[in-house]
Length: 482
View 1 (cartoon, rainbow, N blue to C red):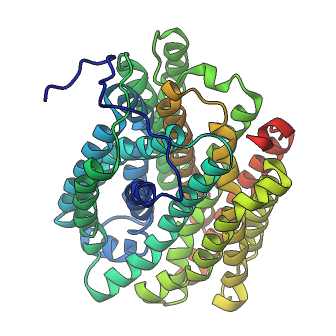
View 2 (view 1 turned 180 degrees about the vertical axis):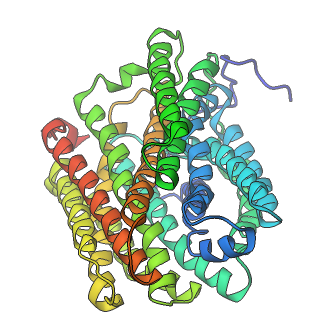
View 3 (view 1 turned 45 degrees about the horizontal axis):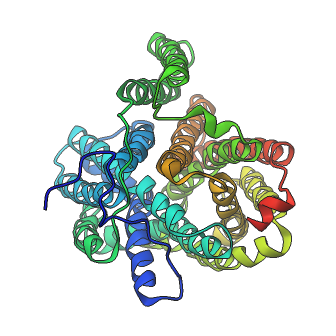
């Protein structure tokens, strides 16, 4: 059957209003969140494998962060365009294409013979993820009306997002210890193919909306962010006097300024600035930018501390995160009830306070601290804080979004979340590199002391998110009801 022209909804296409109690709806929700789970797992599954990757492919300690940054940079930089593609081309179609691309890129990464090959495959994975993530959240936004039903769906979705990142650490440890670091990438191949095969059966295509792709905005935004991340990584390796780093900072400022100007004038921008008109939504967007910036580096440095300072195997290092994962999962399942009873703002501020506390606790980490004395407590507090924070942020941002802009709003949410994590990691790597440049002691002592400085910087970023949310997000009675 021929595809209807862009902007003309087919009579066979309809936005479904899903009922969480219906078995078919449950299967639909399962397929959607499995696609996003794959993306969340891949954001951290290689963390535990980083020492093995470094040894096999010859990365430098600071250059190793590009194995993570290349993925999240392509992912975050193209999320806005991915959301817009879903609005125009259809979200199920976009999700299917993204899942297949993600599987193919994972296969290439698992077969990588050198560092540049792996980085190219990670970038291609990021492109696939940029097509997957906004379509999954947009399908939930348009499929569930505001209120308890959407809170339930967002609860499942948010738990998969948080659990994916944590389970990735455990899964990465298992695969690296029992097989090879390559399987931390190859595991995505059957999952991506299965999701793509299930989508036509369980997910109804959404109406397609008239529009054009804002390629100029997407390119300037992605190039500006890439320049900024490169500048921070360069500083961590060469110091603040490095000419290339300063040039990259200047290019980033020019490109990001140009991006804002392009979006202000574009007829159909990839980032509609009107999404920031709501005070609560603007505060939510600031929160999803700053909070990951403060906490994503924790996973990176704790993985290195566990294996290189405490002498853990990849498997043991992965399981060290399991208490945090279990507490996060339990908390997220309770959040919809907490929102109904207390409202968005108190739950959100409590979660952010706990994340800030966890970072401050890790700031006190010293050489000689073991898992029980130095890591377990902060990990439990972090899990509780993450479980309480991200679903209220998602609900705040998506409240009142028009269906035709659901993809753009979802894409912007996830763009800021992943770019926040990427920029935050690059900043924390810079703090680590600066703190250890002239440090003395054993490698384990230097690593622990530098990581503690990075944890402290992450805590300050999380504190900034907390203060901003406290002053900007109002949490009115009307929005609590929504």
